Image (cartoon, rainbow, N blue to C red; front, side, top):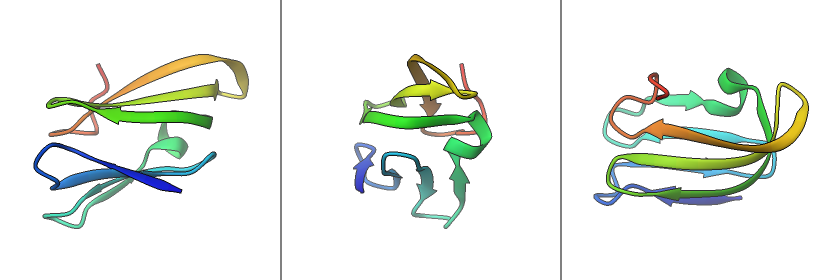
Length: 79
């Protein structure tokens, strides 16, 4: 398990091979991204000033390469 933080370290994604959890450290809000987006086999997570980028090998149990963008300010909206 490892964590990736945004630039001001107020939000983070904690991840393991099968779990992705978005946490807003200021409000305590959490979002279970792997469950809501149906992704698994997480390969990597990186962040820039606007998004967390989650690379996974499965979505809806289909094997492939999937790049999920999670908006840092509003993780409910996926572009």
